[in-house]
Amino acid sequence: MAYPPSLSAKDEKSYAYETIKDRLPLIVTRIVDFLARHRGNITKQYGDEAENECKACIGAMDKLRYEIARDKPIFLLSDNHTDDISIWNECLQKEMDQGKVISWFQSSWLLVECYMYRKIAEAFYLTKHLQHIDPFFELKQNNFYLSAKAIDVVLSQLNADIEQNLDVVNNKSIIEQQFYNYMEISLWGNQCDLSLSAGADSSQKHDPFHQIIELKSHILINHQTSVFNYLYDLQAYLMNLDVCIDFVLDNAGFELITDLALADFLISKRLCSRIILYLKCFPWFVSDATKNDFSWLLEQLGDSSADPVWQKTVKRWQELFRMVNGLYKHIDFLHYHMIILICDKSLPNFIQLCRNQN
Image (cartoon, rainbow, N blue to C red):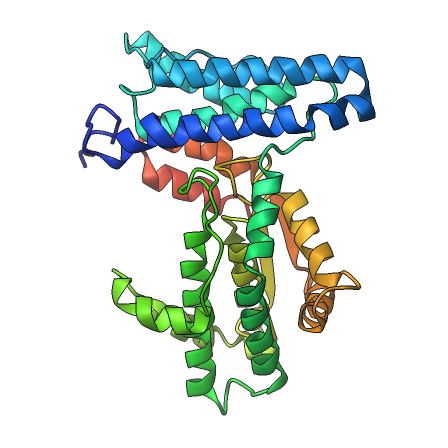
């Protein structure tokens, strides 16, 4: 099967052109601003060496921003901090060996945008004191706080639905409708993606349960009924089968809340017996959830000054993860295999590689 040409910024009328021309440089600029504002605190905590490293990271971001704007060639990575570097460089070298010039506006948009985030990570990995810093954490946390009212709505309804304690055998239609609600709230939680807004406020402002009614007509393909019936027929609720669902998590903040609400609902209604959450292994596409984001969110929900609804929810979540062997994993494999997918365009191979992780 022949694939169409990769979308790239060569087409000035495309989403890719707008992304490379405007969004990516703005995202890099936000990192420069972050480092400039926090340089004093970093120096105070780690000393003069860290201040120089901070300056080096700012310089690397300025250089990256210039190279994007000028459509400069892309080169191999050099940090050796994570195992993915060999896959990245093999992919890039393969393109170069074919005589291709890999550059920001001429090459595949997906390749160069993913490369940008790996290049950002490289700048921090090459330091001694800044390797643990997430330059996007302030943006993610602010988005969470600005979504507080919507979070309260979701968790209040979730607690009420779970406390009903309806069994799925005798209340299938009710459970099925609730399943659709949480599935669609999780779907539309993706609107809070900070990479799409280049770091600007993209918090959840509206009642999510009202919103899913308004947005229903925008769902292009909907197999929710098939998914529900598949889970129902597996009969995890009879406790006679291990049914595990993998969640490949996307954004931190409100979307992570909606994903965890769906996971909680599935476990509580015994539509599955286990959940595995996959998190990104380094800051990725601004707001993608890392292990630190996951831990921070649970801390906010369980804080002594937090809304009682939040505290009640997180207590149940912590217990669920303890009892049902809920796990979270770094999603290194998805980073690696996404590079392979971009390079050889082999979707079946990519899907099989993902399946092999369990």
